[in-house]
Image 1: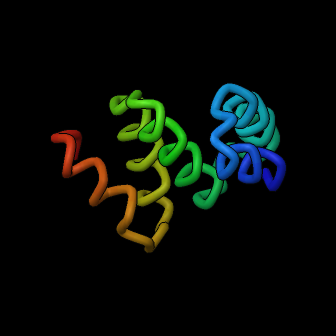
Image 2 (image 1 turned 180 degrees about the vertical axis):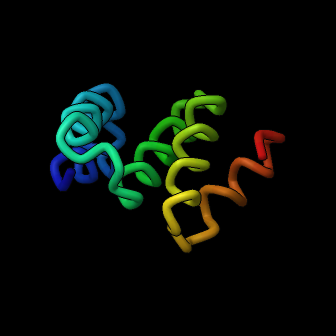
Length: 77
């Protein structure tokens, strides 16, 4: 997941997505991973996917409200 987060920060979104998906296949219930995947999909304007990952992350107890607030701003929460 760290490589995916690094690529995400560098705005290498396609590469980050590949790395996140690998991480998801290994630990798909990790709320931190789900939240970061939601942020990635928000960044590339795939709001439905972002919302789905956000709901999974928050459903597992993730606390930071940033993604939820971003999605509210574009009408996807």
